[in-house]
Length: 394
Image (cartoon, one colour):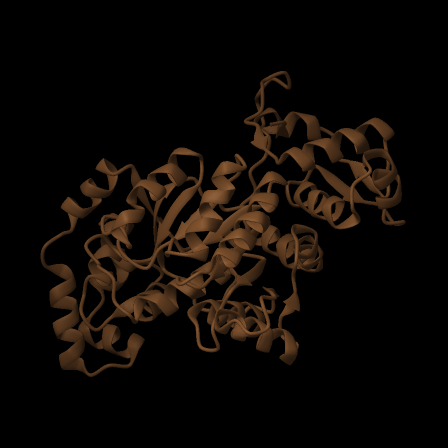
């Protein structure tokens, strides 16, 4: 049986859920093998009674979801399983990652320089302004802006990234055929058409339920190096996303301060006061946090499948064109500077480009992640041989 079909069968089985499906794949080596296991072994793998395991296996084996796979294909969507080459590396290194992702648009296995921008659904004009300003500036620098597609701050972050000509990912809590909120269906289409992605861990047909949004928030944090909150009340899902980033994933979070008497900023002010989130007022502030997460990005890259330049594959003519990998405008400019100088530290790049250090640090992180530059023993950057072959300048 096709592994994607087997995973869908298990996900559709009542009482299993994502954690148990993942446990079954780990125990038996694949979902297909789990479906072929004895009832006793199935029960032991997920610690349920034999009668419950018998019901689950019978339900999973009945009615192949071939129609669902066909519907995904008709929608221009695909299923990415944990362990696949294009499963996002930053998501793969989090505890208990989703066993399957349903994706429209472009995601890749290599870790992206991605920042989540999230906040209140009941955003004020001030909140929308700050969300759009920060998300737009980040997208213009080549950062992937991640958010949850919700009304308010999330939607403004996505739209600002699109206006800046950048890349954005919407992580949704429902099936891809159940856009929520419904009025954001055109926004989701724009995200996909602009080279971004719509991502869910829920199969088709799953509509909005309150219990799905905390799982969605966990995925937002998992895909992102840094989570930025713009407007959040004392108890909010956006704050939960940032807290997950810090506590569960050992990543960074920032909060944008608001008017001191605004209830929609109470949560942000408390997070800054408690010290688990940094005060953020600009894209430069966010770049500092991203730079601090350099090792998380590079560490995830080591776990991502290697994608060598085609010209280096044995048997090919060295003159064969590579499959280019697109980098951001800032990263391309820094690469040109480093390549022209042969070797350049942050100070030399700062003098050459007259940029802020956080902006340069973000660009060099992207170049390191893509394997286009490396630091020498003195901390200066050198272009890696063949780098020009593997990059596509915007």
